[in-house]
Each structure stands twice: as structure tokens, then as C-alpha cells.
Image (tube, rainbow, N blue to C red; front, top):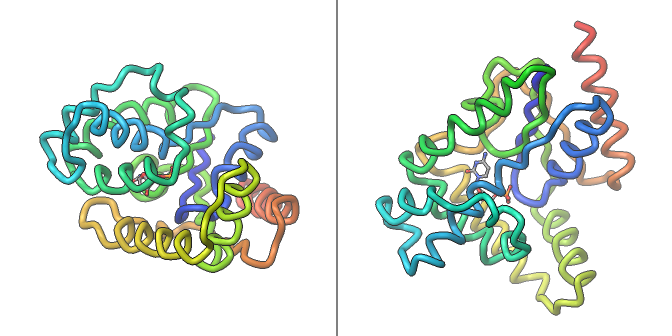
Length: 207
Ligand code: DC
């Protein structure tokens, strides 16, 4: 069983994907982390994330990098979004994601193009979204919770910029697969959103 979870930044898709994986007892891959590692590796190489050759060279990152907390930073998220527009980078990361998706027993993957490109054959496709204002508020609370000062307005502007880049790129843009279930979590807290998603997935698996 493959469950594809796509959606924009800070929509809560990562938490939902993890909880779905726990619920069904199958492994989970946060594919954004792979793009974040490429973005970070470009920086470590002193390269330019907008240059396709530099970005492709950074796809050779060591797996240890995936555990580096710096990958979670807003700045690394921005670099990830920039390297992810290059078709060369998407191609280089494809096999790893596809192999994870098709492993025996199934998997949950979250990202931007899981239902459209990585696993168009997924059993269930979810598109998790929330308003820009609400996503900015959640990200702001999370950053504040880590003891870091941040301006809500800056975060909202950042998120809007990331959305525009992720949705506007020509290769594998962020969009719901035609057969995806779109779930808007704007008015739901984490637990309520998860219950809603779990019920939708269980219903979809019956048909
Ligand atoms: O989900 P995230 O915020 O960690 O993703 C960081 C960036 O990586 C995102 O802005 C676009 C890119 N990305 C992508 O292009 N395709 C994916 N499947 C996952 C992430």
C-alpha cells in the first residue's frame, strides 16, 4: 500500500504522514528532507543553488547530512525550494523515492509531487493544505517554541514566496493529483486534522 501526501509548506502534511505511517505500521519518508540536503550541500560546496550544475553536484550528499538539525531551518527550506526547480535534481532524487514507495509492505511519502510523479499508482493520494495566514501562524509558533524570535509578517512573506516557486516551476509543480483528496486543515488542530485524514484514508481504502 502506498499513501502519497502532498501539500504546501507548513500545511501539517509531515505530521499527518508520520502519524498515518504509525497507524498503518509502515515506513515514512519525508522527501522534502532530500531536497533540503541538496540545498545545504550546495551551500557547503560554496555553490549557487540557482545553477543547475552546482545543484546536481550537491545531489551526491552523504546520508549523514539527513540527520543534521540545520536541515530544519527556514533558510535551508528556501535553498531546497530553489534547487528543486532543476529537472536534473528531481531526476537524480527520483529512484531513491520510487524505491522507497514500492518497497514490500508499502510506505507513506510526503512531499510536493508524490501523487503526480513519484507514485502516480498510490492507493491513496492526499493533498493537505491550509491558508497562508494559518500556515505562517503555525510556523511562527513552532519557531518561537524553539526560543527563536521571528516576525510573523516575514514568515508569511517567506511562505508565500515558497508557494509561488513550488507551484510555478515547470517540472513537477506542486498541485493536487486529479484523483487526490484535498483536505484543508485551516480550522482544525493537529489531532482533529489527523482524525479527519485517517477517516478519509480508511474510507478510500475500502473502495
Ligand atoms: O516539505 P519541505 O518544506 O521540507 O520541502 C522543502 C522544499 O523542497 C520545497 O519548498 C520544495 C522541495 N520539494 C520538492 O520540490 N518536492 C518534494 N517532493 C519535496 C520537497
